[in-house]
Length: 594
Image 1: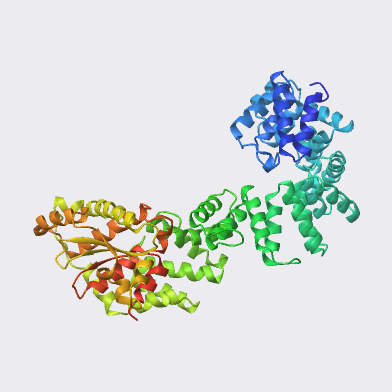
Image 2: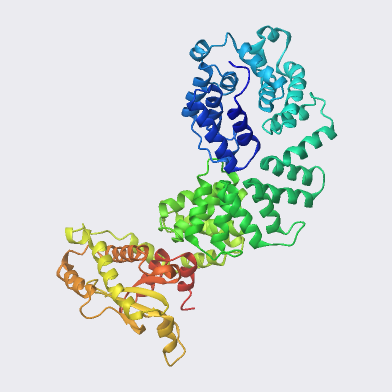
């Protein structure tokens, strides 16, 4: 209740709300903290605004939203006699009856008149607050009897908004941009009689100050004034000043080659600025660029998943962007691209992407439909429904998916019928030894694979197979490399490429798998069945793959299980390859004998 701000508060307010410079904003905040420690109630009110989110302070200023702390500080400032605290408390629903009783002002009107006096003396922030009192209808708390003369809200606005317009313009003249959105609403309503020249002058002036308004002005220039290139320049300027939306808009133009030559590298840099600024669309674009390996970025599925998840869980992520993220995340989780393969998580994302298919483009729709086909046809993440899976594959084929066509061919083949028949075979109760056999196999495979990798050195592995015999009582591990394949005298054929007996590397005579095989033979009489053992082998190989032991090229290596000297080996190899590998690798493997 002193009629004006202290000098530190006045300086701090200008730094925080007119500079749009994080370093200057930090300086202003430090000044507020020091003033608050000395008992300045106005400082408390402005500190509270810093923690109330982007409606009260620039989103890129670096403040964390803390509603509870902001509410406490705002109420305290009002009770200590800050007129700013009282007016802001009303706007943020913090002027509770108990606070109103405790404040030293006789009424809201008295607090308003103090702010009005500072506004009339030229304080820009006070001009803004006076404008808000008129704009939002808080003036009816100043003069309650006025409510009787207005028929409805529009009738009130017709009287109050022209007054608010004048005070907003005075705040703009003082370098404050905070009321621009409300000013635009007044213009759109036609109640403020804002001429085009005045509107244009203030728009351009504030665009030179605020990165957010600079972005909006760029859009205005492109869409309303028909000056696309000038709009792009404003986007770039806004991006340079720290506005993520401006960076995204500019990136989109450079990516599409609109008004300028296509520049994917520059687009990527701009999208990264938008992503780092917390914009969900920018985070999605970074995920896409890493997924595809665009611009100067190498393909990196782990980075892609990280960005897609940041965008998906961004509180401001739109329905469109969320559907796009769900599509890519579903594919990544189903195929184990950049993350641990998880059919349950994959299906949830894919189902959401399927519901939002109108927000996707053809190339990703094809992949989503195919992935949903895989989920339903083979019961991955959901209950198996071969008819629904088949329908998804057919829909994908209509959009040109060769991969889905391969799956349809497989489903229509005798191999698939044999696989389904085997799944329906009754199982024998599982004896204690066999309950942990998948983990035992995994441990043995991993130990033997480490020894093989030491021998292989830097050769490029293209396949790994775990092989049992027709009685399911022995195991051996086989690995082959491109170098070994190319070293053979004859041109490599499918048999040498994909027959484990023809490969260059396997576990030794004293390997962990040899030791385990002896134990398998000893417990063979309690084996629950072939299907049980094959599933345990597949599970073990999946665990080994997920362990990361195969290194960065894991997703390029085809894994499968097989049976030596058995006519059903090919069926087992096919079904295991489809479970253990990405659809692309699996489809190529299924095509090996054609």
